[in-house]
Length: 484
Image (cartoon, rainbow, N blue to C red; front, top):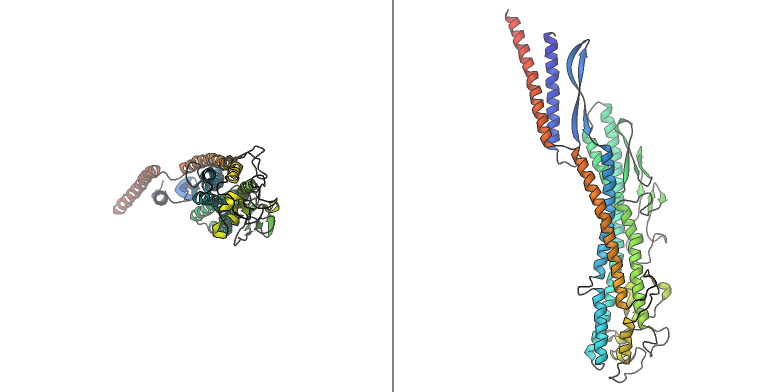
C-alpha cells in the first residue's frame, strides 16, 4: 500500500468516525423527543482499482419497525375510542347519582315515598304537604338537569368533532407538504430524517382521530387510508367537511338534517363508528352525539313518562277527569305520548298544587280536580298517591323489557343499566390500553438506548484514534523521507 493510499484510507476513516459521533450525539440528545427515530450510519468500503480506498458513509437510516408502528397507531385509536365511551357512561352514571348518596334519583324517590306516608298520618299538616311538594320538585329538577346534561354532552361532542375535523385537515395538509419537502431533499442527496420524524408525529396524531394505515410509496412518499377504506392522502390530501351546530336539542338528529354529518371532497359519507371514519376518537364522538346520548335521553324520557302516568290515573285521584294531568305534568299539561322525546326536560309539578304557581297545597290532600278544600283529616288520596308510587307496572316506553317495576325499582334499573354499560366500556378500554402500552413498549425498544449509544461512542473514539494514529505514522514516514 502506498503512503498516499494509506493517508486516503485514514482520512476517510476519520470522516466516517466524525459522522458516526454526530449521529450518536443526535441520538442521545433526542432520546426523549417525540417521534424521533434512532439513526444508524451505513458504511461501505471504497475501492480504487483492485485496492481498498477507505470507507464511505453511504446513508443515515432511521431505525423504525413499521409493523409495530402501524399496530401501535391502531391501538392508539382504539384506546381513544374506548376512553370517550367510558367517559360518557361515567358521566351519565354520575348525573343519575349514586343510590347510596343523597341527591341521587333513588334517594329522592325514597324521600317522596316517605313524605307521602308521613302526610297520610297527619293530613292536616301543611309542613308535611310542603314536604311532598318539595320532594316531587326535586325529582323533576333532577330529571331536567339530567336531560340538560345529556344534550350538553351531545353539544360538546359536536364541538369536538368540529375541532378534530379542522385538526385532521391541517395535519393532512402538513403531511402532504412534508412529502414534497422530503422528495426535494432526497433528489438533492440530502438527509431527510428530521422531516421523516415530523411526518411520523403528524401521522400518529391523525391515527388517534381516525385509525389509518400508512402505505409506503417510492422516494419515501406515503399514502394514508383509514381502516374503513377511505383514502385520506393519495398524491393530494382530501378535504373533510363538517359544520358544528350552534345549539342542540333532543329532537335534533343527523337524519333530520338538523345536525351535520361528514363529507370527503364534498361527498357525504356515513359517520357510524363501524364505517369509513370510525374506530378512533372521531367515531366515538359521533356515537355519543348520535347514538349513546339519544339512547340515554330515551330512557330518561321513558322514566319521566312512567312517573307522569302513575299519578294521572283517575283511580288514584278520583277528582281527576280522564286525560287530565296529575301531580306530574308534561310542561304543565297532560302527557302527549306522540311527543315523548325530551320529556325528561319538560316534566314539572302541576301548578294547581304549587303555591309558587298560584296553586294550593290542599289539592295534594283533597284532589287535584277538587273545586274546594275538603276535610283536613281525609288521607285517602294521599294514601292512594303513595300506593301509586310503589305499584308494580310495566313502562309504556323505553328499553326496560316486559318486567313490572315500582317507581323506585325502575329508577334502580335505569341506574343499573348505565352502570353496566360503564363497566363494559371500562373493560374494553382496559384491553385497548393494555394493548397500546405493550405495543408502545415494543416501539420504544427500537428507539434510543443511551447505554448502547455510549458504547457505540467508545467504539467510535477507538476508530478515530486508530485512523489518527495511521495519519501520524504517515506524517512521520514523510518527514523521515524528506530528511534523507
